[in-house]
Image (cartoon, rainbow, N blue to C red; front, side):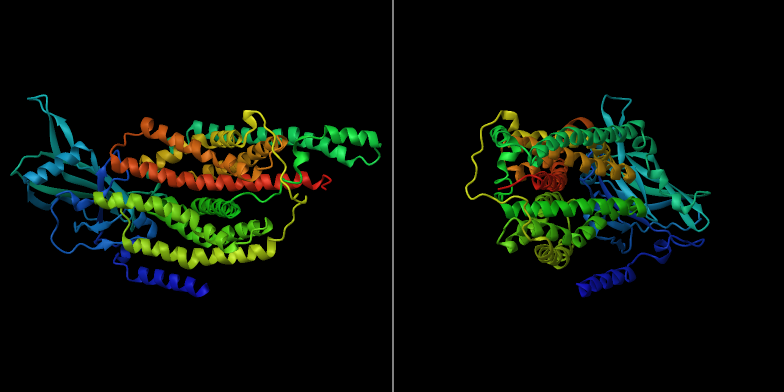
Length: 588
């Protein structure tokens, strides 16, 4: 395993050494007159964030010469970025009044492409020294002589760059010189560059991209406070009601000086969860699958915690694709946890086919994501979009899974079976299963499962709005401290609600609590997905098969992970609760 890690580290170092990026850009320091590269990235409809294409897919003229490509990390490629040197001449601290980029003649096909792009509100993205610039291709203007709207193309780009000593701090792009689109017309694309000194430090140069009024609005703080009060209420509810009831039940079992008549009367009056002590630890159906999803959920919980902490400490939102890269790497190296939890749980419950459980644990969630990603990738390839993942990148992701994640799951499964796999049930399981009596509809496992996700969803409802808005509406999410608090609140609320649901189910003399506790917590993801449907139709202007597929595909991938995470947290909390309450009763 160490040799594999060293190999990956060596490859990363080699990639850095052979990178075509200039030294001045890599260390973000320039001398007067140094060349500053303007990288062109992508274009696409403004209302469809994932529908992006190569910048030169529009019929802009290509500058003469071989344009270099800048390949970022794994996360940048997965994010659909392809940076190409524009070959525009920009010198550090050298102003340019007006220079020509290129000239080209408008043919009928080019006019149609530009008009379609303008009608779809196409925007483009450039980068200078890892700082983004955005602009629109053109606009529709009202014609004074008719009711028709005229398509105009922006032909001049004003680039303003602010610098502090030898470092670039801010960049800005404005456009003018609108030109109408007419077949046979010759257009000249031009640019100008203006350098302005500033006192803003390099460490704060990304602050201009952060929307403080939006993310730090009072409603955001109120949502955190509201969720915190929900935690206090639920924990108090569990403590006062459940613990009080259980204490009364324990008191009956603790009496040793009662006469025979009292004992017989208590036995006749005994009902609820105490009657099923001989069945409550009976191995559930699809034990290998349950162990796999619980192990994967435990891994995802740790993974999310680590990524949030790294984002807080390392400000990962600054780098292109840094969050995705961190997620993939952390997922690979936390795979030991999923194997350990899954292997131990499967062995404790009497499972015999541990290899089957290990394979399910290692492959279930990644292969579900791969299946969704494969469909989306096929759509992206059909549309010729940058969202299509290159074959080489897919090979890299598979290698990470096959040579890091899979071996760690295997190691975790072996360690879990040997260290925590011994059966330790407080009560012996009876040979013949006890019949489950019919109860009212609201005490059935399906209703308990469906209702269990309402309060956890309520605790993260507002945060989901900010997360969705940042991902689908061009806002940089940077308040990971809020996300950490919401994540902790979600875990606590999920555990409390699932414990309450499990207690009601056991009191209904239904001992099929394992899958019910999992689905009760996992149903939070169902409500998140329903909210995503509302968000799509009410809060966005997305349209088209491409963007709709990517929106609901990505959201489905997210909700699968959220459901597995919450389900595992709910099951583990309920498992501790069930073992705790049956530990103090006298089992036959």
